[in-house]
Structures are given as structure tokens and as C-alpha cells.
Length: 412
Image (cartoon, rainbow, N blue to C red):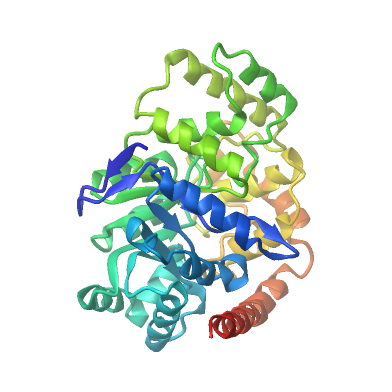
């Protein structure tokens, strides 16, 4: 296994990390036997970083890891989990969730503790509640060894958060289609320049890059070296010297084996010029399938009224490019600000036209935003946002609480 150093603390971290969000399931719950085999195989073959979070698998992921990482395996890995930021209403909530997570993971410390799903709005709210002071206190007490955040917002918001605290690590969505989406390449390079370890999520973009359109597969098939689409996608991320570790959610042992091999082989800067050209050709296939010809360059940003224009178009495009289900829900929760507290949906557009003047593609952005708003938002969108904030988050919290009680009983 290839290892990359976190320069801030000297940790030697496997280039591939095991993401415990997409463990194999059986009858709607974690298939414990198969998941255990996969995780043990990964650890036995050099993977030393495991990432989970409070809500993964309905709250069961952390408990499962606590069960199986006994008998010497806990000492061989660095555990990463996350504070459920949307559920934090007061300082005491931070203490409650951390203690619950330590109990579920059956450990006395968490190696990397991240604030989950940060955006500009949610970070400001949590700062006022004292989140940074809390994390510092827990670090001094030894319950947390490293402090970081996972991120879902734009590059400007990312830089603002990165500058607000001497973070040990960050977790960013990044793949060859997301070079200019959310934090993007700009964020990856900025975090690295600040000495922040860069962990990557969604290297396969939720599986989209593993199951490519037919036109894209023909391009990969033309390469002198034959690789699977997943191999190509993972290799692209690992090629970046700024990346410390790529977190991959692996649901089958064959995926674990393939990803380990890729992580062993791919050193930073190892892709050839000809191979990089193939990526550009594949990216062009995706662009040709896009409903809106947006390259996510970000020249239209920042929007004076707060619309996240690239993300609006990204979600809209996914509906048509990949027949993605649940895009309206994603639009509601992500851009409606249900969890982040930062509304950035298309319906906020006031037609000022500043974005049109800045767009290199000469897109009629306000008109396109209107299309997005009608199709993904629809009539009564603002009411659904209010309902989501008032009802969805508490229901989600209640569900996790019930799941937690069941998991506690199962361990009793």
C-alpha cells in the first residue's frame, strides 16, 4: 500500500481509505458478515483509515465498526467520524453526540473528528455556539486527536472556513467531473497550501463514473492499457500530489481488491499526457449529454443574491445525464438550505444579469435558472423549505435516536 503523510502531525495514511457509508446490505440492514470480510481484507492489505459518520446506515455504521474493530484491529487503523452539524442546537449537543459516538465506536478517542457537511451558513451558526472551543477542549482531553470538516458549498466559502481555524484535515468532494464544483481543484490546492490534509470523498461521483455512458466506455476501450472506468476515476484523483487519502465506499470485495491495487500503483503525477487527453475526451462526452452547457468555471460567482449557480445547473444536468432519481429532494435539502442553513437555490435570482456578463459560455443564466426553479423547485418551494427545516431535520434526528437506542440494546 502507498502511504501519504499528513505534514501537520506526521501521520502516515494509506492512499485509499475505507468509506463506511455504502457497506453491503441485506434485508435493508448492514450485511455484517460480508462487510466485516471486506474491512478486514482492506486492513490486512494496508488500508489504515476508515471513515464513517453518525447518520450512515441509519445510525448503524458507527456501532458496526465498534463491534468489528476489536481484537487488535482498532489499533491498526485511524478512525474518522463526524459531528452531525444540523442536529447541533446548543453546546451541550456537541458533548452528547461525541460521547454517544465514542460509545458506539467502542473507543476512548477518535483519530479524526470532522464537522459534517459544512457550508458558510452552518459554520457561522456553529461558531456562535462555540464549536471550535468545544473541539479544542476535546482535543486537550484526548477524546479527539485531529480536528477537521467535511464540505459542501462553493470555493469562496471553502477558503473562508479553511482560514478560520488551523484545521488538521478537510474532506472534499472531488473527481474528474468535479474539478470546478464545490471546493474543486482550487479548494484542494488551497487546503494543501495551508498545510491541511486533504481527504477526498465521491471519487466515483456516487458510482456515476463507474457506470459510464456508452460513448465514454468506447474512449476508455481505446486506451493502450485496459482499465475499468472505476480504476480510471480513482487513478485521476490519486494522481494529484495534494491529495492525502481517497475515501471510497466499497460494497463488494472485488471493489476492495481493485481499489487497493489502484492505490498501490498510482503515484502522484504518474498519469501520462496521452492518458490525461483521454480524460478530457470522456469529460466532453458528459458535457455533450448535459442539458445546460455549463462548465462550472465559476465566473458567474459570487451571485449578489446568493444563488449557487453552478450547483443549480449541476443538479439539473444530473437529472438528464444520468436519469438521477431524487434530484428535487437533493435540490431542496442542499440548495434550499434545509441542513446547511444557507439558501442558494435558483428561485432567489432577481434577474440582475451580472452573471450573464461574466459567463464565458454566454449562457442566459437568469432564464436557465428560471427553468431550474420551475422544474426542481416548482410551486410552493419556499413552503417546502420551511417545512423541511421545521420537520425533516427533527424527524431525521428522531430516527437516528431510535436507531441509536436499538444499537445500544443490541450491544447490551
